[in-house]
Image 1 (spheres, rainbow, N blue to C red):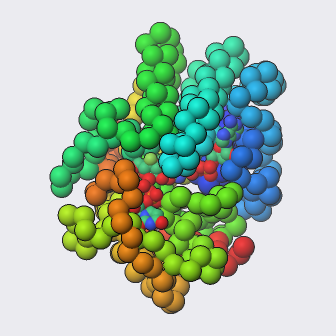
Image 2: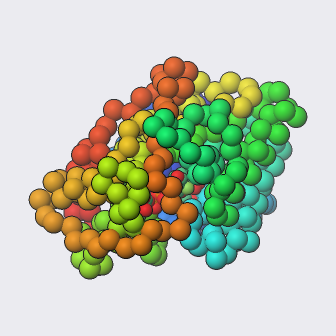
Length: 334
Ligand code: NAD
Ligand code: UFG
């Protein structure tokens, strides 16, 4: 049986991917330093799947501990989620982000090399497309990347993509699948795992959850004067279970060389439409206030998803309404 190491596997996307991999028959081990997640997620994965993955509480910056995990592991592949992801924090603490995300990835890649593991699936982001205007079309994977990225977090994703491309040039047996996520939302339908960041969240849905739990009085809607039908920004929100399944598809199609796929739905939803969808699912109103635009936000971001469909057979099937229902289930379980 293929054994997969999931870095960042107690985090939001990693935990859902662990569930899908285990359900598909893979053996999974998880490495995480718990900087933004909780060890109890391992119990939740066990509750959902009946399998308790081996957990290594290890920091990717600890190169000898990482190497030890690999020497004892016999992994066939790595799915690399571990990283810091708070855009605003990355502007304040660029060194932390470059060290953790790029430095951590270098340690990981060195340990893979030393132990002969030559397949990686990497969590990248739509942010690498920077500020290319897309008009009415989605971003395609062949569009240029790296220009107009507004923050160090985004640049770490771009840099890691370039590092992986260089490794594949130097070693034709190495396989790197780069997945560019759009906006993951929702939770596992069991309500047992979901997005539960430590500290103050940055993303829309965790903030919606805080307002729903009355931990915040209202949601700030950043800008209502964009050139969109209701004036608020449009994003491509993909249900976390669909996103997790995208990793399964990527893993089973991985070949030597670099392959890059967008993981999104190809559909856009505005901030106000998200608020309305949450209100519909919960039956309660969600207080919000319109605030000035947030620096660095693009008006419209959505994926062209045709490559993932034609090459991986991957297509998102769940809706924003499904994600709202599952988010509420997770919220009520807390
Ligand atoms: P998350 O914070 O829930 O998960 C990341 C995990 O990595 C956390 O559990 C954290 O403790 C761990 N981690 C961080 N630094 C580490 C280190 N040095 N050593 C070991 N573990 C470390 O975030 P997520 O939403 O699950 O995101 C997973 C990946 O996907 C990240 O790389 C993120 O940048 C990327 N991504 C996320 C989104 C999104 O909107 N959630 C969008 C695009 C890309
Ligand atoms: N938003 C609000 N109020 C909030 C938070 C967000 O109105 O309190 C709006 C934002 O302005 C944006 C939308 O909700 O229009 C989504 O914002 P998020 O912060 O949830 O997501 P982003 O699209 O800004 O960022 C996401 C990922 C990043 C990634 C980026 C690439 O979180 O990791 O997509 O496009 F870099």
